[in-house]
Every structure is written in C-alpha cells, then in structure tokens.
Length: 208
Image (tube, rainbow, N blue to C red; front, side, top):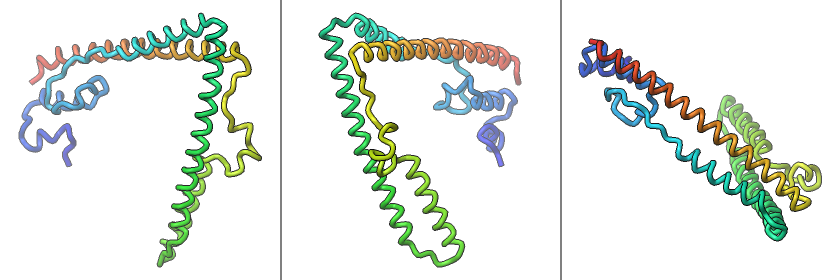
C-alpha cells in the first residue's frame, strides 16, 4: 500500500529520487510550514513570525509599569475590581459546574435505562456507566463541596491592595519571562529549520 510519500511513484507522476526526496522531506518538522502546499512543491524557507511575542511582551510590560506606579486611589480601585472579578468568575464557574454535572447525570440516566440484549452488551453498558461516573467526578466538583471541600473551591481574594499589587507584579514578570523564552526558542527553531532547508536545497541540486 503506497504512503503519501510514495503515491507519486505508484501513479507514475514521480520518476526520480529527487522528486521522492522532496515529497519525503515534507514529513519532517523543518518543513511543517509547507503543510498546506502540494507534496511535490519545492522546499521553501520558513518566514520568521514572532510578532505575537513582541506584542505580548509590549502589552505585559506596559501593564507592569502601570501596576508598579499606581497611586493610592488607583491601587485601591484595581484591588477592589480584581476581587470583584474573582468573585464573579467563581460564581460563573460554579454555575457552569452544576450545568455540566446535570448533563453528565442526564446521559448516565439514559444509559442506565438502556436494555441490552446480550451478555457482551450488558458488560459494555456496565463499563460505559462506570466510565461516565468516573469522568463526571473528575470534571465536576462534589455536589456538597460547600460543606465538605469549601477550602478547595473559593475565589482568590486579596486581603489588601498591596497583596494584589505584589501578586500581579509577580505574575506579569513570569508572563514576560515566558514570552521572551518562547521568542528566543522560535528564533532558534526557525534558524535551525532554514539552515536544514538550505542544506537540503543545495544537496538536491545534484540529485537525479
């Protein structure tokens, strides 16, 4: 059975080792940027696309400067806003969690009502219900979480404006460092890929 790399040989479109090597190279990570092009397309250099990292870093650094230089009024305002947002997000997640558990319960009830006709199907039903219940408990907080596990499920409220400021600065610095790391990795990866592609193109020039 031909692969996507050898199909050209089978249908007679490719008759040389060079043509096969070009197709085969498309499966290598260095040519992932050509995934939308025909398998026989000649290797092309990868364009460096890191604008998203530069934009992220600029936005985060602007936010860091603003948070670091907040006055008393601005700091108190941002602190209250952050606590309110945390509470609203927590309430939203709690509602979504209830809805998700209800969807699981509906499916479980309907599977439980199914009446299989063979032992093998009965075993499948048991396993299917067991799986649903297992995943439900993983995806959803306990029904009585407010009484039994309230400490695990609660919004992040900052006790003072200074606590919020400190946590926010730490978070922004981590995000900036992460984006700078990814930026460097992308530059290094693109350079390595293009070096490989350059060597590939040079080598293909002498191939038959």
